[in-house]
Image: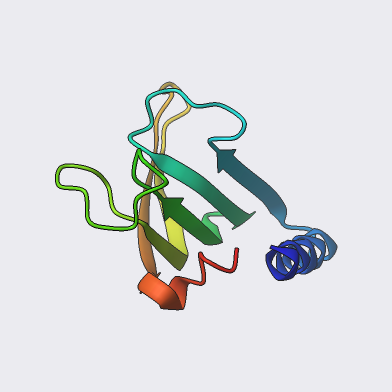
Length: 118
């Protein structure tokens, strides 16, 4: 967790120095548990520069019964992903509350996502 916190801090500082709008999203069951289908944790840093936006993040999932290590039929397995993405704003209508984006996200799942260490 210490390494992830340092990485997020460095990325955040670099984006702030570049005068880019930056956003940090942290979601965790320890804060609020409200029917999230056992979604456990997510962290995402996003930078917006004009019409373009870039992001890097990590999501983690766990089954309902954390004491079990076997596959529980019908329940979410232990899983995680780490990803990066880029996108562009396509349409913005001042008379509407919607903005449309096209975005491509790529990443890794499984042990390569480093969720166990996080």
